[in-house]
Image 1 (spheres, rainbow, N blue to C red):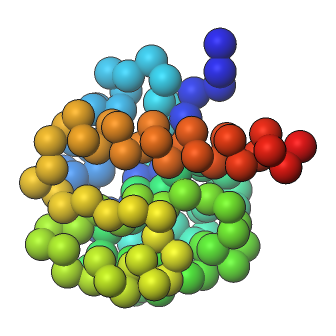
Image 2: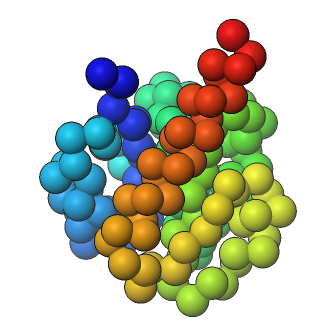
Image 3: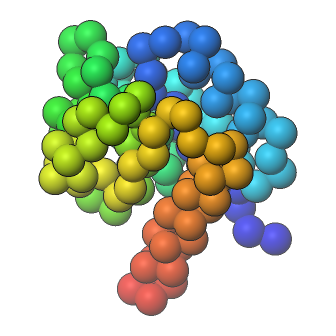
Length: 131
């Protein structure tokens, strides 16, 4: 059996973070390793928590999503980042900064879970091919 997918949730809205966490905790193959309240917090925690996939919001205090993505990719170039935004705002900036994919927050639960699994699988395949 493979290790669970390690996920870190970054969003300045506590209700969103807790809602995502409850969705993921119901999955046997996903483990929430931490939460960040803004981009700066995500940068500080990413290296310590070593998630496979980071969910990143766009507009947050202290540091927005695209800025945080650039900073995280400098220290963890292989981490997969799923940009999760309200209206697709910042999506182009996030992808240019290094996000692997984006979804809007009104996506279906199944689409979110499939995106996380696909991103984690692509990261694991890359590791296997390199090794």
